[in-house]
Image (tube, rainbow, N blue to C red; front, side, top):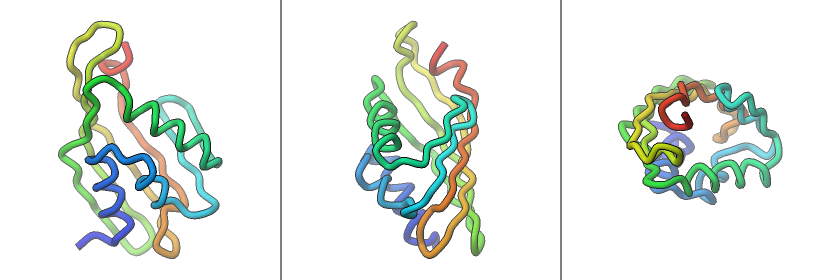
Length: 119
């Protein structure tokens, strides 16, 4: 059974819930979107990141699998939606690697190929 923070992360992604996903992060955190070359340590900027992501046309997160250890976790997921430029549907497989501390995510790095979503 996944730790509560990991279940909350999964539920927030599937529900596209910005406020719920923000609650999984520790007071001091690092969120790193490696494909976009973004490093976020400010909750207001992270809120805007997820608002933009969850507002994309047809956006969804599915096939979420959680793998956890004592201080680390990994999530696999499928990000889907409609490409704003082409209008074509896309699906992108990706993963998140998380460092956990005191029931919160202290660091998360996400990995995916954005080509079909953003091209």
